[in-house]
Image (tube, rainbow, N blue to C red; front, side, top):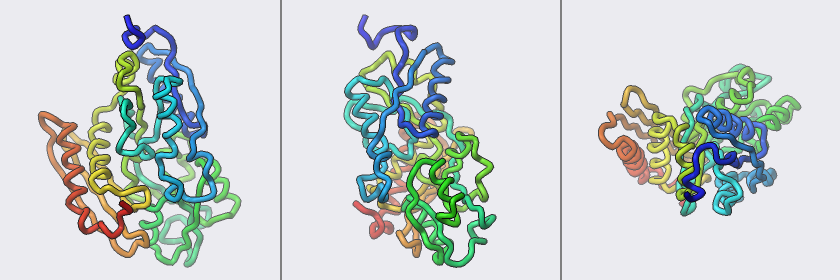
Length: 312
């Protein structure tokens, strides 16, 4: 019997993760779920390039993939058995030999407005300072409030909130999923229902080696089908646009009773213009292929109009 054919009881699975408090919470969520299917695990913390770079936007340093590269290298080097990612950080093209074997049930994907000085984004005073490191969020803010001053905001969630409380800025935008997982949902001042989130926001993915049948057999038991189908659509939309992390794009797919609903958009970086698209269909015999096709066609539909804003 080969190593990849060992039973669930054959040794703990090595879970690779970043070291931030949120990343560790997410890794421990996976560990708890693995325990539920009879698999032991241990946490292996790795520092990524994205964690080290704090003085400039990630878009200027190579993109969100900087948060996953070291974890993927560790997978390929067989120093971990699986890697836990926030799926919005995972590039649409994975390294050869790796695969996302499961995604957990998605948390609330919305963005939230966080401030100690205003109850809503609309109530911020003229010229207020708002922190964000996301080109998408900055474009959406500029569309809604072109008078605000957007400044670079890097660091983990705790660091960002501390900067707000220290008065370095008047407000910030964050993912509600991260706040909830950290037990900080009370810091959300306003739910931004009108802002489409980052593609794949709120979803946790588990990446494995394609050839590791033992790990894949265990991990696939954790997969949430509706989340998987939604992300198939969103990631296909992203890939069809061909945009980098410098491109302000957003989108959200949801599943309800076998029916897929998708909305996507690409914005001018200064928020002065945008293009949007929608798709709705009932998934039938090949749901993953159909969901990905819907996302791909939605991306190709708006790509000609969005071309000036895509950093190809």
